[in-house]
Image (cartoon, rainbow, N blue to C red; front, side, top):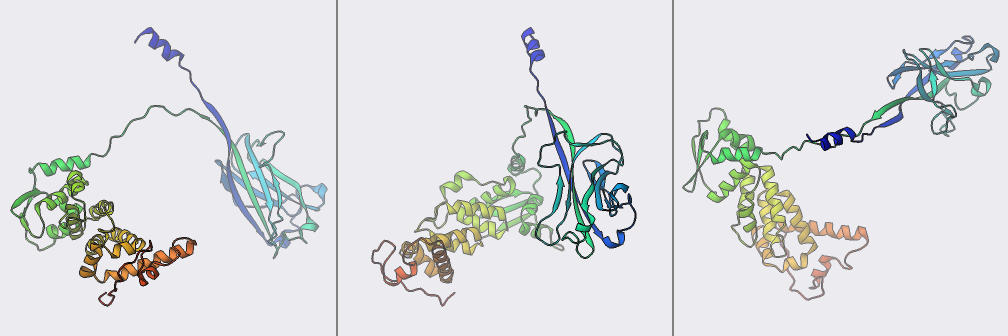
Length: 404
């Protein structure tokens, strides 16, 4: 270490900050049977349960005949007492006699929210008290709204003063790397060592691990670990292309999509797109996260021409989020959608979805009506007279709702 570096270390400035604040807590004390407590004697009190604030125990003392003989029972007295061991405990206090009429005219004595000439009150030892010998004139109390059904209610708040040195936070930190569990399991997939099941998909073989598949898919778990089921070492998988199964395995092991292949094939214009087939695979094997990831990709490609096919695809594969987006989009652009080839496909393949689309249209119109804006005429109204949203004439179409 050079002399300059040594001097830099020695002369580096330091800083700290002292923070003084209160730790606050409250207690609600109900005195039932006030009339029976009268006459117990000057200097005798009724005590609340002990309550803890700022690491100390406190109690409320109520003197029905007053604390001092010189007051001749003219006043009731109320005090807050330190009920645990402590030396020079500094605190703020608030005593509230509750107005039980509901008018909110409480009698409040408070240290809080006002300047203190001598600072917080200091309690020297256990049994030290703060309060009022002449808290309230007894004759007035007994005819006031503070006394109801022979009951008094007193709220007490204590704020214990504490000081601490607030040192600056350490400026250095330890960076935690991103999760790499996917890459580790991906290496397991790439390496056939340890695999215990082989899938034959259209003549192409894929080695995998039953535990991994079962952990990710309830369907695979049922296949591999169902009781009284023979052991599966090689499985012929039908109804799925090798590229789709490969993409599904990639997700199962890495929790990610094969981005390059998916982005290149996410268009609805292709009836055999990989992303559409992967959505079907996710539904078949109950891979909820994969289904949602496919829905997210497919949402990006929705257009007037593609929304009909997308809606049919979503309905077929229980893709509820994608279906909701498609219904909303189609409802908001209904005139143009009804002239598209995708709508003809929807009418032919999924006629029952037309009723759901009508409900979505009604919902959109309700939204426009409730917001006070939107189109001056309803979408259905525009279609009924052969005009689209831009005033152009279009051929009227008949909705077939009988096959829902």
